Image 1 (cartoon, rainbow, N blue to C red):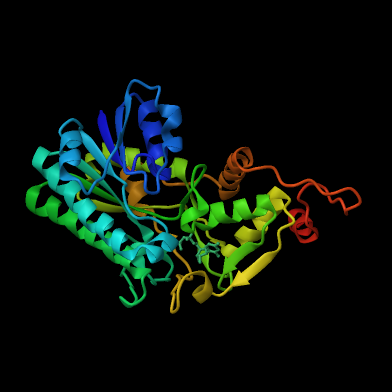
Image 2: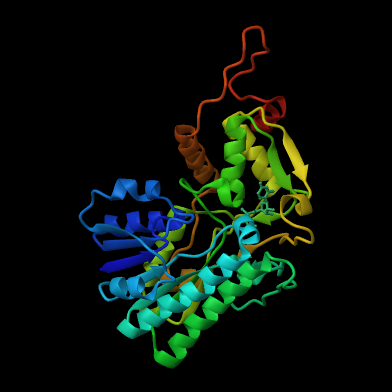
Length: 348
Ligand code: UDP
């Protein structure tokens, strides 16, 4: 298959490119390098079935040229990360709304299948039990910038579903639940890479709020496997799917686990949301996926144990971060990165 990945140099896009190439597909990655990086796809560039194009989904001509030469488009290009959305609201709206509009228009023009990446953020503050694809969305005020992400992605979903209903365009919508893995950067606020980096550098681990909020972190390898299976499955067309691991972990627990595995001496600090993000910021207490529909359609759902994922992320950062400074002669020498609390946590 000839695949086009928008946002192909991003964290998830680059893993998807890898998986598609591994099974023999041809991949064109389109990326404007706003949050994606060339580094993410450098290892693929020698592959004759891989092509990297620097360009923007906001440019219909670029999208049209690439769309005409593919069989399926994986639309992953979007403004990502709560922090980035809050810092750049206007560009985020434009990218998420206009970008998706261009991709859908061109896919419709050339009759190509679209897999649209959406997010568990669309459920907003609905903190009830496992969330089903048809669960209510509970979204806060427009004065709270965070909600523009959920709102614009929900509009993208409406657009894709409308193209399916009225124009018979084959579309599949996937809602990612906190995808994590190697190459994800903490730069845009994501908690796992931030904590790992802080722990390895011996910096304070920054828990926002009380740390009792939970998330279901999903290994990018699981996410990609589900995306590929859904794109291949005609029964997925015109439908929405949660892609997430069912295992829930609190942010406090995450901090402790990161400290224990890295044997870090980092202290944990609690930062109020208003300070971390903006005044009036609202967080979700929990966000758990119901993956029954996914299982019924493709026969499996994400299940890689989080600790395994976390260890891979830590190894990735250990290779890319500068080594911690060695203690000066005469200083107390603890075993590498071992903090008394972390030692207890590791034992317990
Ligand atoms: N978070 C945190 N410290 C950080 C970054 C994030 O405690 O340095 C919290 C954040 O407030 C949220 C959770 O971790 O409750 C997950 O945040 P992330 O931005 O990774 O994903 P999302 O909020 O979209 O689930």
